[in-house]
Image (cartoon, rainbow, N blue to C red; front, side, top):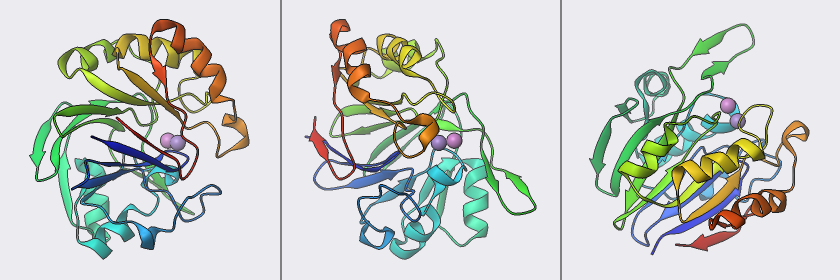
Length: 228
Ligand code: NI
Ligand code: MN
């Protein structure tokens, strides 16, 4: 059994009861964070890209627990320079870790760390297919709709997909409904819909789009979890 818990915005933990990984651990400064970075206990940290609402507290968590940041090469080099242990990968590649398998998928977005007087490029943004307990979970990251999502679900049949729906920076609901259709996941968790005014929307409206397609919509508010 897999447990997915929302920690607010695009931050989720995925656990098989023995091992846990965390996606996009933005907790410090996140208006809806369900815990603080010091509460996090995980085996690996998976940031999808360098934007602050995704990379978040990744470096601090990774250093404190001495667990790897798994990401694209350029982003891992940034994290390594700041003292974090890393496992560099890149789009299309998969690797078996002690907790399970991670495959990096494409995402149509940007990736950088924006400082006061510098924008530092951190490689391509990505999504992740994580296989734990024999089941595949797709975390899309921030992305537009793309038709190759069909291949992601075809190659690794998906138990659940975590898809952004908030529009403006990522897919909106209509495109995310097409994404759900392409992916053929048994269930979809909508994400990236609440932390900023410009992306605020009602995930129940998204449920109404995908449930007629036979895809279960699992809405998780910060601190809520679901079993798959
Ligand atoms: Ni982003
Ligand atoms: Mn974002």
